[in-house]
Image (tube, rainbow, N blue to C red; front, side):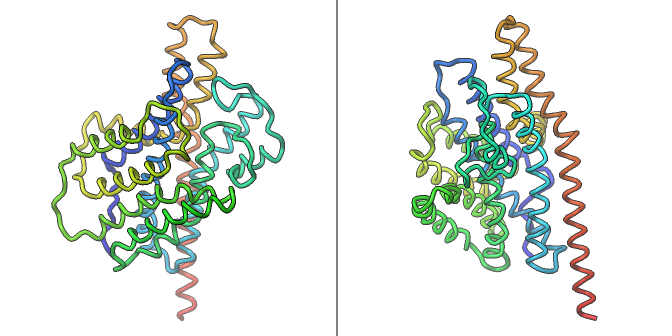
Length: 353
């Protein structure tokens, strides 16, 4: 078993995830507070960065789970159980809250009931399969992640062991699928983002396959991240399909760069990034609601009253969500998955005796 490229604390991964969520946050903040500015592409590339980060981390998660699993089937099932309890509890909460309190999908919008089919599709995170509207605008990316979760174990099976650098062929295959499958049916739109997810798999594969120790200095990593953002073109509102080629290339650049830079040292700045990364899911789902409340429900209040609510909501709500929902559900999902893996081991031993 090759060594895992993932660490319990990774300053480089925390920086990547923090930049991703803050790109989305700042894009929507500037669009809400400063209507004349357009930074839509900044937010969209933040989501692309999420995809690269997610696939790398989940490849490492599969590698760790494999040490306990006795079959590929139990490994995949344990992985899917963990992801279910990671993604769905918080998304279901927000879908229900948006409907109950009639909150618009984005801060400047107007609430419109999306219908029972749309509501159920949002609960199941399959809006892109039913063609339903998002009840909360940031939810557009979650069905793509869920559908990639179904495929990631099979990607891991394809590159594990001594199968070195197969991820590069996988990335090329993902580009071919991205160019063809979404044109056949809109329900295959997830494949438009396959090269972004595959870039994280390339990073994982490069790290576990490398036979040399030399790497670029840690300071290259933040420069590389912000250079990728600049090359994508953050200051425009061009729709993502018109910038897919650029997104795919920059995703691969980020994945390759991550595999070839030293790990950053932990200090107080990285502790801030770690907090943002740890609470990024709550930030991602809650920030539009916070903006709606501050800039529209509190529109008659003076700025000195709005700013503390904005800061308090942007920090406090994700912190509460993490302690009360995210972390307990993550731990519960891990326990269920480990129980499944232990039972599969016992069952295997019984078959052998």
